[in-house]
Length: 105
Image (cartoon, rainbow, N blue to C red; front, side, top):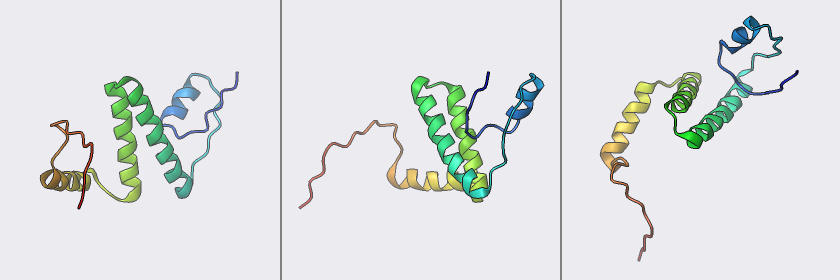
């Protein structure tokens, strides 16, 4: 039976499938398509996380984030620095504040 996926997969999945006797058709993406597919993969993984809130799905979200950072030439250290600056300036989300309205003069 033929299954069609047309999506970005983890690096070792092709070998895993081939080792099981599957015939796998794949391509190595150019940079433009890779960036597009990383964005799609992030949406896919976030959707899966929101469906069950599992730590495994959160780990998948993080793996895609790491790949995006590497592709863009950024590091988690840089993200963490910005995160902490924003947290110090604006706070976090622990207090569960839900903004309803703001009226300006």
